[in-house]
Length: 441
Ligand code: SF4
Image (cartoon, rainbow, N blue to C red; front, side, top):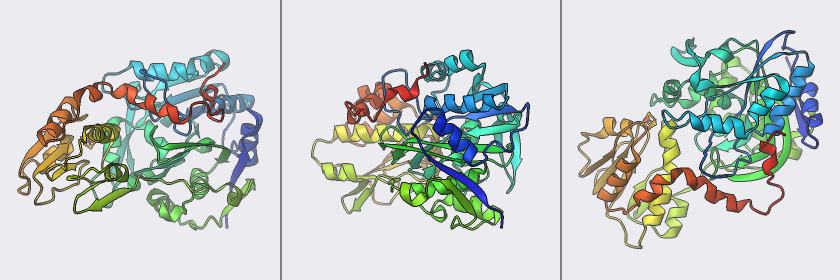
């Protein structure tokens, strides 16, 4: 039986730890002399409005620089760093700000690497197995070798977000929406399992200097973990990463699907772990915010504990995508602030592409164009309040919730960019959470 090598290395020193992780797993074996190399970090979120917690959410610039050094030492000259972060349509300044703040311009000057905003580059439609197609960034398709740098994190839709999931940042927005398909079989997990198919050989280095619980966003719980996981086999790196986060690969739908496609064992028995031991590094990371459901409502547990009643705001499913995902947390925050102690009158809020109204509700709020189109004429709806658009219009969300008797404030939605800054307080005065990991000197 073939053995796949995965290295687990304690992050102790810049460069040396990264070099060890890559060389221990023989991770550059498929990188040919003169290869064009594409590096994919993870910048899942950025704002120009405030300082916000990045630990476990964004690939550290420290790791990125050390990876660039290791590759250059192997004689590689053509290196492109590429990321397609989701910003508001037409917002070209935020990605530029992110790249500069994270030191990518310094990397360009120091090492001669290029960096590109994937969203501004050409895409090419690629037919994948199973009759699906996605539009991939031309730079990664045209490269000879990919270095995938996800962060060690859990994710509220996919349980973990590691190497496979990180590749979603190289397809265009239309394709990302397609990934969150309402098709019960060819769903989000089905798409993620196939994301690496058209790409050249991939070295995956999972950045576990910090990890994130209840990711993928800044509202999750960040931890200092000091760990690197690397492999020349993407799936093996993800399987080990999932187990370190406390999940069997068979529990993670996209990993289970990917494993089944290639006929490998799910129990990691064909993986040789080099360096550390998985057992010594496992720490269970919750992936989801719990919800509470009774006759008084269905809301995240935090809202139920606050006493909120009369609201039925089901947990989003895997069809909620891109823009709506970014707004969901804000809507819940606005609802918490709007609560004045009197039960609301049977208000249901529906999101994503698949949800159906519950008969008997007094008012139904439809968030996003997909929900509007699916349910606009649904006979179970007594009072329909829709926030249309993709992305949904924040003013429309406020109007819809106000119309349902929930007095959320418009001002909060106009301050959307500053909200992440409030989460900094959790990490202040804790030297473990060091902002310098996201700078390059
Ligand atoms: S409306 Fe929301 S769920 Fe529908 S495609 Fe747009 S972002 Fe995705």
